[in-house]
Length: 257
Length: 262
Image (cartoon, rainbow over all chains, first blue to last red; front, side):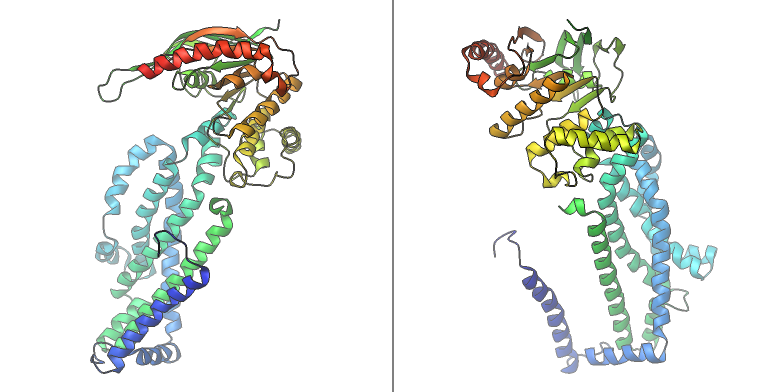
């Protein structure tokens, strides 16, 4: 192994899957071998059985659907407002001077701390869940997009000016297309964080969703279901991440040349 | 004689000092004129302020004193009437060769058919047929700079400003690029102001070479290059060419040493 030496695609796949296998093997060894009480940690086999029961007997598919809908809803709302705002901040320095301190301040407010307030304002319905995601994603998106757009290559901006571009043309045809791949990458990252907020939002005051199922299972000491729920979240995250990556590569082929 | 197109009047530039350091004078007041359809090179050691002067002409930088007049109108900012080719590769990486060349015409709202016509014309001119749909990263440095020249020309500017456009290229490519640019000029006779630190390059293409002093820059001397057009690359080995080269070598050497002593 030498530093930075690339690894072949097949070796990469084997190594990546290998760790999952190792992880499950260690888990199975301790649980099936009787080293850990099933009260605290279910074995992989129990976990799978519980998972099947969740889907067949408890309508878990609906919970998964609800959670996905809340995450996507809050995230899309945050992106639709946050991306244009970030572009405006990155492109026009007075806008940045006006908004940046406040947005930076808001970024450090933990989204989960707003849950009691949001319950007070929006009840325990869907709006409250979506708002938690929104607060958790929005300020991150705004700041990261602003930094990306503001870091545009100055020589490209100058080239566009010498070609007769106006201020508006610079934003539309240089800053935005130049920053687009990085903006898409930012969205991919923030979508991952959004998943961590939704579970917290569903732990309190929810009647459906993966988080709600996990709280219910905790009351019943059903660690198999809890772990199954966590794994489902991980799988959805992995799939959406892959899809996002593939989409970015397709949309911005020039950036990976 | 054709009329004067570009008039540089008493243009100087002083950069403010950072953190209490004294300000740097990059350019002493420069007076200079370029006639229509002329090809003029500005030759000087690196860091002498010649690029600063060119950027002021382009409107990308502003003079501390003096003014630049293009066809009698003062330059107040960058514009499509002055095409610019940078030393660094400044093609838009998200656009193909053709889209890059169409950037200026499109930005100025020319009809689609005319954009296409112009890009086709200049793609052929710089020898990039077959590469229309390549992205800049798929091209060699020389091809990227050819695209940059085509992109600047597609706007039909009054004057073409080039800031060491071949500086990053290897020597062989560089020589071919000089012939290409000269060939384009010989056909179209567009006014050209070309900045370089390469003596051969300065003489081979220009009708007039202005020699810059070491920083703070000023125009130290001007030499007419009397060779007929079209010029052939064999010109570079003639005694007449060598004589001009010898003279410029002395002048530049003195300035480079002065710059080094600072």
